[in-house]
Image (cartoon, rainbow, N blue to C red):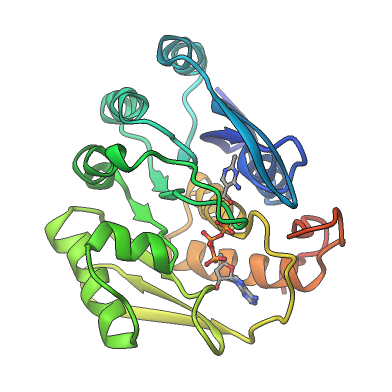
Length: 264
Ligand SMILES: Nc1ncnc2c1ncn2[C@@H]1O[C@H](COP(=O)(O)OP(=O)(O)OP(=O)(O)O)[C@@H](O)[C@H]1O
Ligand SMILES: Cc1ncc(CO)c(N)n1
């Protein structure tokens, strides 16, 4: 029996460590959660963009998942980049079987604008993964693609939140306002209320992997048995601090800082 909370990420690798499983590991480690990672795709990527993608064959992802689950059950898991529909179906099978708190980050496009999920996978993401999720964390563009509507106002955000919970079956939905104008406001809908957390927008391009980091902190907090609301507050405080103190690595959209966040 593990003496530490364990978080599992099922996601892609960014060799420069700003996004994907490496960002997830850094965030979980910093939140004092033991991290495990099942890799779905290798990307050749840096702060300037994605140069290439190699998808791990589905039968090998199956072996990775089996190795993890046959040995020790994680206390919470997240998914990030899952490029193709058959990978999603496989992952859904494990989540259904083991019923572990699940955070789904619907990664579709990198900060650089490069595509990380095929268009044909959208129906599978909606039908097979979203209904299993305790929290889904779309950014504005992902929320538009999933809910099938344009989002230009707070009213639109509220409609999209409700579509993703009431119609699609996610238990909690967080729409991240990182790509809106003005303050960085995130919206959580838990079926009863809509809660918002706001931070001053930091004027920077050092936002590579912010979404991965945010959902990894949520996962770490759920692994520690924190409530969704507590996890939301911690993830927001962590990412704001991590962007503010970004280490200025690389020549493009640089990564965030996983050393600087200290709890009050
Ligand atoms: N410039 C900023 N200043 C303050 N907070 C920000 C900024 N950009 C993003 N955030 C916050 O970072 C978190 C991640 O949001 P974002 O919308 O950037 O996710 P994402 O687009 O999925 O990330 P990624 O770039 O990894 O794909 C949210 O809490 C958001 O409000
Ligand atoms: C591997 C990977 N996952 C997620 C993202 C989204 O930031 C990215 N750029 N790369």
